[in-house]
Image (cartoon, rainbow, N blue to C red):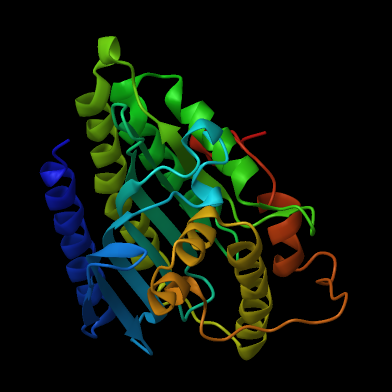
Length: 315
């Protein structure tokens, strides 16, 4: 199994995203390249690129990793129990950007490839990933733009994929203990591989590239539209409170975080997704009728954002 092309694409994607975001931010990203020495539970290499206290991003990182392990952890075999315990190879790019301005949403994107290598059998390869948006103050045009870019990226691969992956995203990024979504969704897919008659590995890889390539088009226009919006300390306070939900999801439910920790990955890179400033309050709720309350009533519920127009609000 030759994964050279996948690795080359992912490294190039990371570089394009980091260069674009560094130019928007005005501060260079720190680069931390790492290698796992042979003989341990996990082998491989990667590159963590991170900015803190930037002009746009209070904290943001974009990671590449390519690892091989002796045994798939439970988080990776939840839907494929027949592969439990098999050696594996995994590579991907994962990013989270936490802007300082509460009118600019937090964003997450991940594209990855897994290969289970069961002894005496052919490798089992699948792809996963997606992107999702977590606003603090809702703007319909931003939500619609983000979802439309996701829809258009998937369109060449079949009209059924966007509705399926959007619903999967709404279901996945949901805090069950809070009974609320983390954000306004986007797309999410996992354990994805097309059969040979539908294009197999090459077609599946092409879809992964389409998703990765769509990220900057989905996010940068929103950043440019909102980054200079004035904000108050009260709005920053609400942003810090909402970030607490982000932390709760990543530490309790996120499969990527669990996979990294269970497989012996680099803790600093795995927890790069954590926001820098967070607040929790006991049983706090925004005042009815405020923009903060509107986030919950109008945005944090599944909606057909791709169909939104100012004249025809989405249901």
